[in-house]
Amino acid sequence: MPFKKKHKLGFTSNQPFDKDPVCFKVLPEVKDKLKSVPNWQERLREFVDKLIVEANIEGD
Image (tube, rainbow, N blue to C red; front, side, top):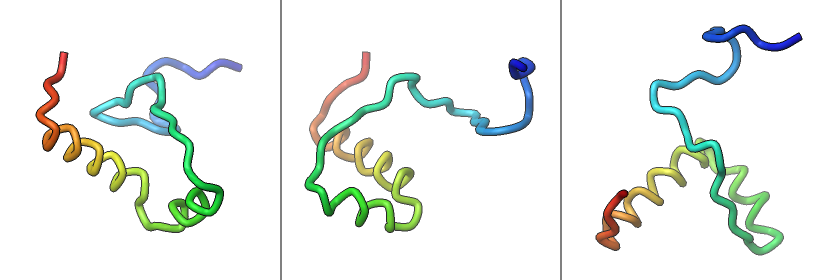
């Protein structure tokens, strides 16, 4: 049974994310420690945005 278009169930956002995730390898213990940090995904996204600004990298 396919999802209906414009459904209100599941993840929705006014600012959708890219369809392709950014992946990187970490040391074995880092993954579990990172997942224990509250709101780690949003905080990591904010850090990456700040890193890009500090590096003076312009968008497309």
